Image (cartoon, rainbow, N blue to C red; front, side):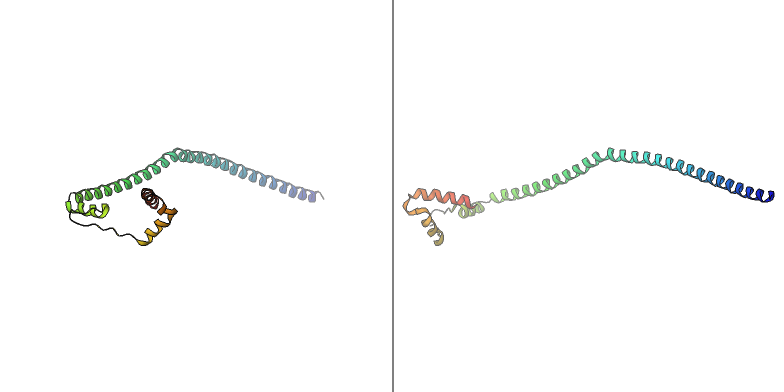
Length: 157
């Protein structure tokens, strides 16, 4: 019976020793993982801090750069528009040097006629009728009608 106890004791002892060894291995691997994890966490935190610092440090200058590039593009567009307007004005100035062109403009816009010519103005019958019916235009003096016509022309533009 003593042999049986010894075998049982030795098996129990072996199992206990095996459990302790296994626990020690698990504990060692967990401590290594935790050490590695804490090291990586520290490194990751430092790397995150560096990246965030770079983003914050570069955000304002990049925003300024983009804004200034947009301003430069707007100014270049305005400069091209101004050049086109200068060219149109130069062309108009050159045309105004021609006497025939000036006479044509005077005839078209100011209804001027040369001495000896007879000027005719055609009145639209519908427009004339409309003027007569507006607020009793026939009952008022002629100069009131003229001023009303000027006022109406300003409103139409």
